[in-house]
Length: 388
Image (cartoon, rainbow, N blue to C red; front, top):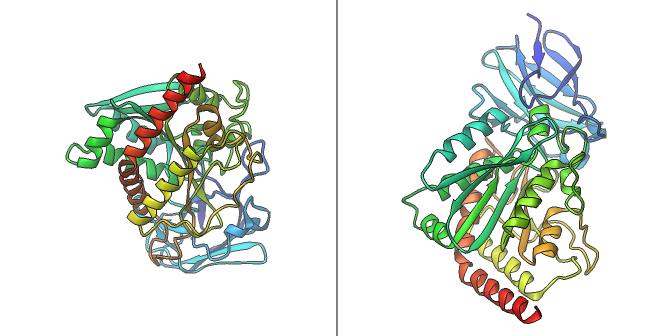
C-alpha cells in the first residue's frame, strides 16, 4: 500500500517531493509572501506496521537551522497526546524521521499543534465562565477575530498575549494553562490575583498564520513582532488592534509568550536597551525572574539572548515598545521546541503540559511580587502628578 501524506487541514504544512511504499522526501512550505519556514504538520496513512523514513530535505534553508541539531519530531495517534520520535536525526541539511506507525493514520509535527479549532474551543469555554468577559479587539487580514478575555477586577493592569509567531504553539498551550489557573475558584493565588489585577489575555495574536501553517508571519508575510513601533491596518492590523486596546488600558505588567527553536531552555528577555529605561522597571523585571526561578525547576536565567546596550533596543518589538510607551515592566517568555536540557523528558520533551505548568508558576511568581508592583504603580502615579 502506498503512503498517503497530506497537510490540507488547519495549521498543516508539508509538500511531497517523492514517495514510495516506505519512504518520502518532503519539503516545508514557506510562509506566504515570506522567506520564513520551519513549522511542519502533516498526516501519514498507509504505513501501519512498516518502518518508514520521512526526510525533510530543505531544512538547511529554514529560518533557524540551529534548531535542528538535537531536535526530535513529535507524533500522535489521536492528536491529543504527542510523543517524541526518538529516531529523528539531522545531517547535511535533511531532517530524517524514522518510525513504525502502529496504526493508520498518524500525525507528525514540529511541536504539538494548537489549531484554530482548539483556540475557538478555549475562548468559548473560558468566556462562558463567571467573571470572564469577552471582546474582539479587531480583525486579522483574513477576517478572523483577535480574541481577548478579561478576568479580575483589580487596579493592576496585566496583559498576557501569545502567538505573534504562529508556529510557536507552546505559547498558546501556556495561555491555556494560565486561563485554567486564573479561573479556578478554589485556587487561593488565583483569587488574590483576580482581586488585585485585571487581566487582559490575547491567546492568539496571529490567527491567520496559525490556520495557514506559518512559522513566523501573518497572511501577507509580516512578522508581527517587528511592527509595534508603527502598526498599520494594511500590514499588521493584529498589532494595531491590540496596541490600541492597550492605549485604553495601559499595562503595569505585560508578558509576550513565545518559543525558541535553538535554545533548549526556558528564559526571559527584557527591555534593557530602551531609551527611557529606569531602575524601577529593571528591578521589577529581575525580581520576577528571580522569583520564577525559585518556584519552577523548568525555568533558569543563565541561558538566553544577548542584552542590548542602553539606547540600542529594537523598538519594533512588543516588549521594548511597551516598556518605553507605558513605563511598565514587560518581558518576553521563551520556551523550547526541543526540551529543557537541564530537566529532560525522553518521551515528551518540552510539551503542552509542561508549558501549562510553567504558566502556573508564572502566575505564582506574579502573585509573589504583587506588593512591589503595587508600590511601583503608586510611585509612578505620584511622579506623573509632580511632572504635570
